[in-house]
Picture 1 (cartoon, rainbow, N blue to C red):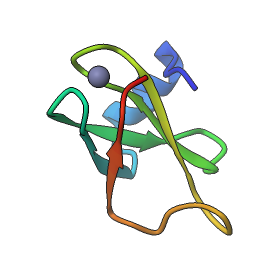
Picture 2: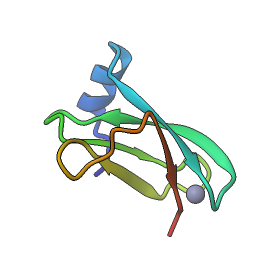
Picture 3: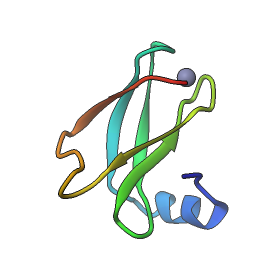
Length: 70
Ligand SMILES: [Zn+2]
């Protein structure tokens, strides 16, 4: 769920990402594909709430994603 330092390095090399709108905080951010390639994960830049969007069968194929912060 969290982006660890090693994954951040990978992000800098150019990971696939998904644009996300954090509806409750009225801001935008990006979710990056995790190491396993199973989900896009990230945090709300405003409140730090973790967000994930699953990839695949039951996941999203949207290129843009809406999230609400808890
Ligand atoms: Zn938020």
